[in-house]
Image (cartoon, rainbow, N blue to C red; front, side):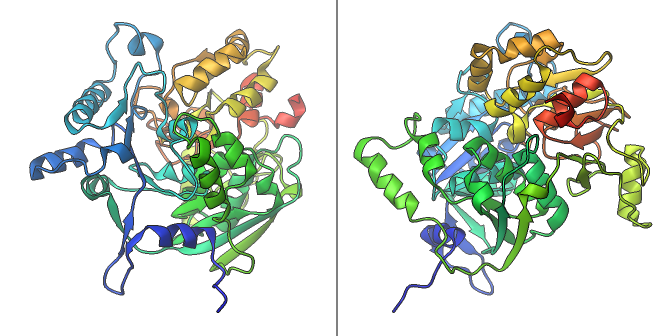
Length: 468
Ligand code: SF4
């Protein structure tokens, strides 16, 4: 009898199912890698302590500091105390918990420290076919490697620490088929923003996306991570891309990737993960990449997005849209290009990798940030920081008048004190433009590193193609 054609998701899910779901109970899913950070782990470790339980698999648990850590060098490497009291306590707590439970931690001064979704791929700890969880929504990033990766809540962090398993309902599958070459100046960030605009912020609910097609195959690993990172913003549980030669050459030689004959064995296993020809998806959408433009958001969720040359659409009295426009201080029918900006943030687990910094540098080289604009550039990890410095990018940024910092989540969520003031406009390469995300009353416009850098130079929302 012929085997049923299966999707990438189905193969990874089935391989990790300890117990399948029933109408009354969720499935029990085995977790290969559990990533920890200082903000969503304290409660979970307290739970273990109160129950007298150890961490079930410390060797499959990896901790870093990123969400609330300072980006000012003197607070990371100098003797200046961490300015934000809550952050200082979270850092100290994770240091204690990691030591008490024998969990590996990349502490404040570790050269391997950085945003959790950036360091795990850098290390080669993220691998195809794995199940990966973390107490952070954007764990979907790791799906770029053909892993099934998603965010979990603090209570679930405790479950995984204690059992290395998770209770989960099996999601449905959703194919995002993208064909055609991305035009110059149009990046993976613009592609995912346009997909979210098309599918809607809850269009992916209950599904796992698989990004497919020639356009996706042509993306680098860094661009694939940008795509998978924002799957959650379309409501999807996770996003995945089948592993291929691009994946293997990214992973080869990384500190935690398999070596020698193990490497050959792993690659042949990973090659078999791709969706079989003829496998059925529960839903699908087709995207023509050749028709895309740089994108920018105008509202308070990532689905409120338009091509940069477009005007704010007329939502015809829709209450959600009206509220969003009031918060943003925008009106229907206004052009997005040319609107003044106060702050530009280049960084985050969406766009804080070396390629993103190279894109920004391409625009900033030989130019100056507009008077009155604060351009904050925060590398996604200490490794990226050093690579950017060695490649001369940091010098380009400083000469342009940008503020170049130590790695962390920083202004993506503003927990470390890097915030946007009330009423100010911030073009941000991060993934969420919710009310107050970057500070109380802050107004966030999501865009690519190219658009962010071009807007910093002009002090207005600018189509990057004008400066390329
Ligand atoms: S950069 Fe932002 S989205 Fe990414 S892990 Fe940090 S807080 Fe979460």
